[in-house]
Length: 424
Image (cartoon, rainbow, N blue to C red; front, side):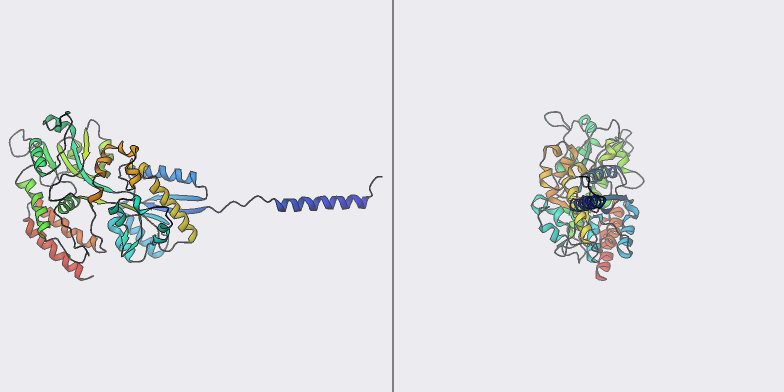
């Protein structure tokens, strides 16, 4: 029997309802919201290319997080960070140097990471102690160290071999202590014309600030006291360090005065045999054709080992939504986990597991410089450090340029530093 028109209508309605109900019970899950993170740093050189590559990989592996990286030259970087934190528009994750951490943490601008670290994603035991401790301020941790960039000894392999400074296998042998250093530097200082102006120097001072901190740390000294409340620029250790540096110029005549010449270009072009500089200068040497160089830990000039260092720290602003805080922490952990890739661009990782890996040992200069991680010397943790540094810089420059005796220059720097600290 053929169904009536009314029956067909009822069947059609039933089918439609079934389809509607069926569609409702099998909805496609809504796509999770993508969290966008603004990541600021000052990596405007080859390190920026390395970081861009790591960020791209992170974005491809985390479809729910989108990191937008902005590179701001270091010369204006901190001004923009400060303005962003104060007036809005601050990044969600950004880079600070160790010496910048105190002033931002002290102003309550940074997110304390203690609760996030307590979850165990990043374990303190896997980090080298000094870089980890440099992330603290007043008992709380505000950062994760991405790297350490210590100062080390760069030396010209060809000049060493030509001077006969080699080991039993015929390889260039870098100096390990002051006695060896002075002996090598004298051999490597060559005055062809005999006019008192060598055409090849055994050693050269580069960045006077970092060079001085290395010498100072090896004398057991520091720019400020342990609590950063008193100046130590006129201490016996401070004077001993600067006296030794001036002796390299005036007494031993193995280094030129730091005026009127570009020290690093001298090393790059093979006119200088040894220089103390940071691992971050490695990329400039890799681009130099026909320069055969190597790296080693800083020689032990004083009574203990020491080498100036700084670190790039990963931080987040205090005012951050819960979802961005979670996404930011995921990104920070990823960068730390992949810091071997970052090290290839000219840095030293600070994770013990990465330092012990065979892949890291294949980076010869980074590996040699990493041997200093147990005793690296960071600048004192002080909100006033930027006001103090110009006084120390001027004292070191005045002494090495022969403008003032070392003790007079340091006494003046000490007096001015005390005035700054007393105003705190």
